[in-house]
Image (cartoon, rainbow, N blue to C red; front, side, top):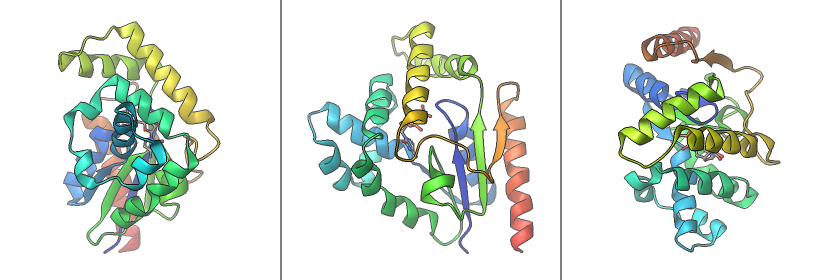
Length: 205
Ligand code: CDP
C-alpha cells in the first residue's frame, strides 16, 4: 500500500513531533527531510561544495546528533536555496514516499513539490515567538549556549529565506489542512493530525 502523508511548515512549528506521532500511530515510515539539508549544510561548513555533497549524500549521514545545532540549521537553509542541491535530493525523497506500507515526510516542500499527489497534506505552523520559545527550550535543554533573542532572530531569518527563495519556497499547498499549534498542546495537535489522516485512509478504503 502506498499512502503518503506530507507535513510542511516553518522551523520549530511542531512538524517533527507530529510526524513521528502520526507515523507511530499508523505504523508508517518517517523521513525528516530537514536532515537531508542539514547533512549537506554540515558538510559545507566542513569545506565541501554544496552540489557535489548533495549528490554524494548517504543515508548514514543523517544519523548524526550534531546536525541539530543552530549553526547547521542556518547552513541548511543557505544550501536549500540552491536549485541543484534540491534536485539532487528529490529521488531519495520520492522513493521513500512510495515505499510499501505508508510514509510520513516532513519538510518545507513535500506537499507542493516532492509529493504533490500525497494522500494527506498538513501545514503545521505557529507564531514566530511561540516557535522560538520552543526551540530555545529544546536547545538550552540540550546544554547549548543560546539566548532566546538569538533563537528568535535565527527563526525569523530562516523563515524569511525559506519563504522567499525562488525554488520550492515554504508555502502551504492549496489542498493542505492548516494546523496552527500556537495554542495547542502536543496531544491536541497530534490528535488533530491523526484525525485528518484517519479520514483520508477511510476515504481510500
Ligand atoms: O527543525 P527545523 O524545522 O528547524 O528545520 P529543518 O526541518 O531541519 O530544516 C532545516 C532547513 O532545511 C530549513 O530551514 C530549510 O531551509 C531546509 N529545508 C528545505 O528547504 N526543504 C525541506 N523539505 C526541509 C528542510
